[in-house]
Length: 158
Length: 200
Picture 1 (cartoon, helix red, strand yellow):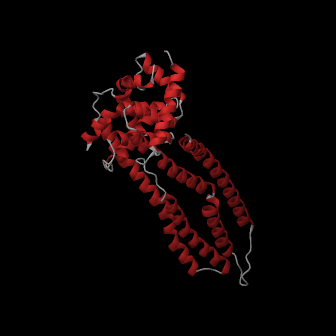
Picture 2 (cartoon, chains in turn brown, cyan):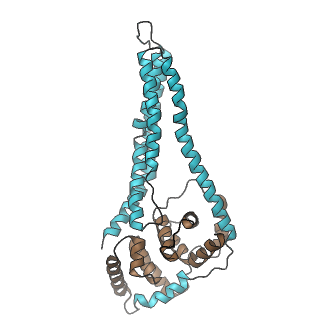
Picture 3 (cartoon, chains in turn yellow, green):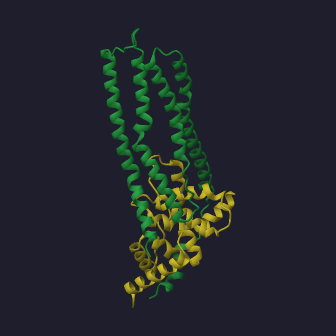
């Protein structure tokens, strides 16, 4: 199970890091990141495989992030271990102009729209996005359409 | 520039930064931490409930050796409180929210859970502190009754009751503040996110 979980984390680390950085407040990145890993680990055994791994990661990570409350008692050892691994990049790399534009646009969106956009850009279908968020696929499509218009209005011609 | 033009870019920079880190240590720590958390939750649940349950035989013994009606009433109230407290705590634990559910379902059950916990903390005096305090008052006051069944409140007991009342009032305000501080912002956050989800 360790190896399988390790592979899931490796394949989804960018997504998890982005979600943690999108939702965390100043100085809370490590705490949120470790909490998401912890929740993924806790529900990994019960993961049925009805949905794709990506959908499952999105659900657990977004649900953990949007109700995250900094714990009074920190898991010191885990935090240290996670921090060592995260030392190279505490936030997703933004090494080009387009990624920076996208990141700045996403920061202007509310959490629901940002989550939908994140999954859309990731290549998830409207049905998968709807499954993660809990709204209808048509509602997802209309939100994506509105987000696209908003983006084009802001960055047209750039 | 269109949003779709950035899809590939996004996937390269955010989604697929393949890591070469060895995560074995992290996973071992996760496993250790999960076991620790589960043990802590189990220990806390057992402690909360067993204190109330373990006191019941003491109150029953007291009931059979009671000095009078006042003390009997105190022991009965204490027994009922010790049955009601675990019932209330177990009931509050029944609302669970799975992180594998959709965000909407999760937030709805989380809202219910947090509201219930907030309400439990705000009303702790009515279902926990007050019944036990009244029981203690009745039991101690019942011990001072004379042959005709009239209680005699001495200075020591009066001071003790005064202190007890201050303690109850203090606990009430501390818990009300804790409920507001601990659950208020979280509940607000959940409600805001649910509103966002309902908008089109």
